[in-house]
Amino acid sequence: MTGEMPSAGPSLPPDSGPETRRRGIRRGLPMGGARDPEALAAETARLREIDARPGLLRRWKGYWSLSGPGWVQSALTLGAGSAGSSIFAGAVYGYDLLWVQPVAMFLGVVVFAAIGHQALVTQARPYDVFRATLHPVLAYAWAGVVLLASIIWQFPQYALATSVSRDIFDLAGLDMPRLPIALALMAAGTALCWSYGRGSRRAVRLFERVLKYLVLLMSLFFLLVVLKTGVDLKALARGFFGFHVPRDREGLTIVLGALGAAVGVNMTFLYPYTLLARGWGREHRGLKNFDLVVSMFAPFVLTTSLVVIACANTLHVRGIRVREAVDAAHALAPVAGAAAGRVIFSLGILGMCFTTLAIEMVICGFVLSEMLGFEPSGRRYRAATMVANIGILGAFYPVPFWLPVAASSTALIMMPIAYIAFFILQNKRGYLGDDRPRGLKRTAWNALLVVAILVVVVAAAVKIMSLL
Image 1 (cartoon, one colour):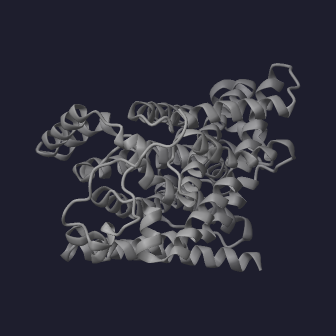
Image 2 (image 1 turned 90 degrees about the vertical axis):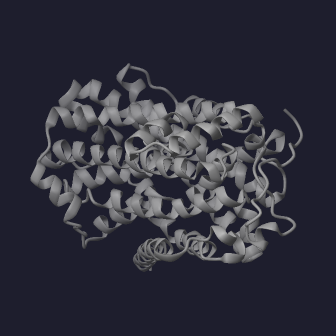
Image 3 (image 1 turned 120 degrees about the vertical axis):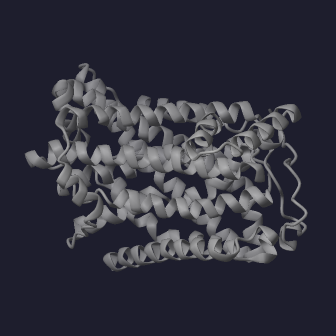
């Protein structure tokens, strides 16, 4: 496919605010507009039938096969940062820091629910909304920070993925150079990423389905360890509800790294665009909430909690200090022995890094297409996605296993920009019109959004002070 595709998507509803009807605010995405009208009508009718079902569980059962964007977010956030933060949390503090990942992701889901509401009821592209409704400088700042974060994040993805791949070859008696491994990762990641920009909803759904099963496979690896080693229920309760906060520098970095990895600033850009790419509209609002809980919150909390528990049961109790991937692989030794444990662990980490690597490319493609004014399809979009692969340089230098955690905690500094901007938009009648939340619902939503903002602002301030 060459050239550009025209912007497509459903028209703005008549009760949208006047600011969403300003000239220059584009609506929908090419892949979202490439919808079979009959298929769209059938999906809408099915959603209405599901929404009319009595009982939450019956509705959620109907939503399951239609979920998708949440899995993209899960695959992105379950990368080197989350893996490293969870491994260090379990290895150094046992069960004590189990609360961090669920709290971080819950606050992230609150913000994403607001972002999703805005995207679905207006169909407006968020970058254009920032530029026309807030300020052009803020739009450039948001997009620029996301672009920079995505490029920076590729370095630890390539570094860790290459490291664990070499470890697998080492167990087979092969001393595999870094270059072919890194090039293979880039080729596979590029193939997966470019499938997302082919301008068809079928390609988008295939992309989401691949990510869904990779995420579930990661969880299975660590579930085996937990089932084998057991769970200390009292320590588990203290870990989730004790809210222990370390006072030392290493502990604070682990906590901040977990917060930064759970919901990165680049996810605030990706999420609304994945909704538009799917062609979702206001009729998908109930499905959106299900997708956030079941496809994003649950897999992330389950996987990271299993990693923490597995490492607490093995590395922490044995006093093993994690300096590189092979040290962390001891966590799987109780299940399959040292050698097989290393392979299983390395495959799990490889899957986490690979999915994140491909999605960071998607983000760079979206960001640059918006900033430079071309559609996210065709040759220019594919070239834009390759900017993220500057991070391939991370594969060729000795990178400590601690790097993803440090990178996550540093990326947290950028988060308040996006959170505050979407909070303003959520309360702006000129933007949302009659779809702006009202009454008790608005009060509750604003209270949760303010808590999320305060958490990231305080965390960012702590990180900045630690760097001085």
